[in-house]
Length: 151
Image (tube, rainbow, N blue to C red; front, top):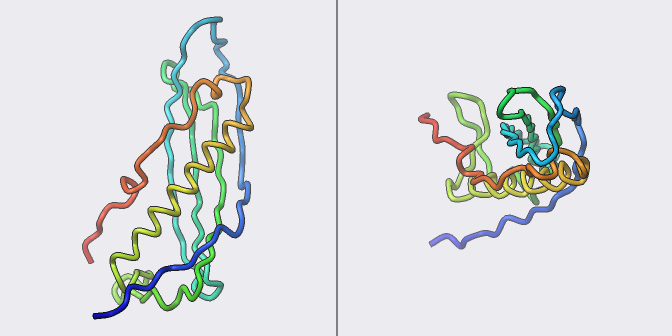
């Protein structure tokens, strides 16, 4: 039986790609509850040569009753993995990387979870005193972003 190998990783960097926020054009009346709907889009890429996984998170926030976009932000999260090449192989059909051991794929869910939670804090700190302060980025199940594809 093969010994289970722990994957050693770290968060190496966080980079602001863009941050666009504007107050709603239609003013919010004092005491009025306004809901903001969020679309969260993660994108994961591998750089085996550099032994890193790049997680890019884009968040768009729209006011629910007017559908006006008030937030469009994107950050890049760089995760280093010791000896990444030992865990990956190339899919012959798609030429994309995949984990040799399917159980190791869970680390991508972990990285998206860390990135999304960090985005929540970044957005909160940049929008204090605005409509978004009372409409924080929701807690989401990051495994919902990963759908099984058939090879």
